[in-house]
Image (cartoon, rainbow, N blue to C red; front, side, top):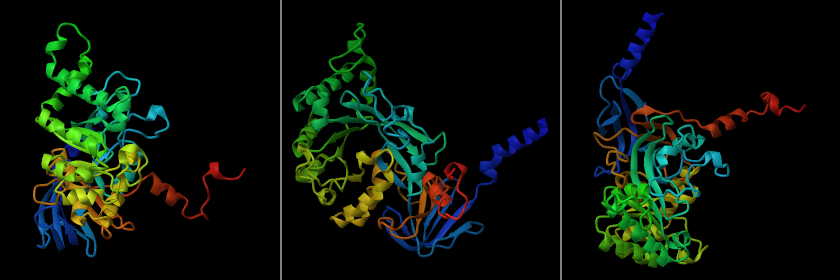
Length: 422
């Protein structure tokens, strides 16, 4: 019995090396997101979780060949802003870890600490072509919502592959309300928080629990943002609010800023581009539903792109369960002036680069083998993935939704007992 157990354990330990295989996906239209551009009738070869080659050559001898003639082959999609895995049911507090409105902590909160790889939304997201995501919490009482993390969509317990990659903050109308009722109050709070982080630990050594804005734990956590090691993701929408945030580039040039929302960004696109500040926008935000977005337009993403702004696409309002809708947002961005190449990169290579992951969102030698095979143009509404690979591993193409669909597809089959009429 013990010998059998040891034999099995030995085989499992050797499995990655013994059963590693070369996979070649051939015959498809390859979107590389690199200088190679789009390759017609190409071949992607992957082995040991990495891309071995991308081109038009024949598959290597001994490779497992996946025929993809007539299909599209792309990098796995990367959600620039998501809360997948942080809330199973938004209306049920025990399952919702997106925010902590009753906590005194802000900057020191970490989305990674609440990530649930068993969340049913992960499989729903994965089968739509998303292999990676930045998960970010939501500010509670204050202006800061803590650190975001990077996760893959495998649903495994080691899905988190990078922690503390971004800090989220809110200004504009929401920030004003959280800071006491005005934009000047929110701005002063943020500047005070920056000063607290700079003064840590010196000003806290004397026994003070709090600084002007941050408690001790938050001042320590905010330090990497203030020194520029971690970017600050600031939600802001109004053009004048955006310009105010850009002044932070002169005041604190070491802080790396990413704008979230930027609904009126097109009005100050040249200034955003000159400041070299990237944006994460929702291209479908076009309703003036509050005063800070009166100039909302469907052409925002396209105008920002033409001005030279680095644009990623996301919708914070659909971040917990509908990250998959980013494909539709990207398609609508193309319909309203953004280039196809720019829109696709906005949900793949651009987010990866924003979070320091140049080997994701691209198909090139040495990159991580996140690959998706599509039955057509990914940005066309009726098309979908046929296969998804994360780090070279083929993923199951099913979710709770597809299982329910299949379960009741044939109504002639006996219903589960709970559904039978008594």
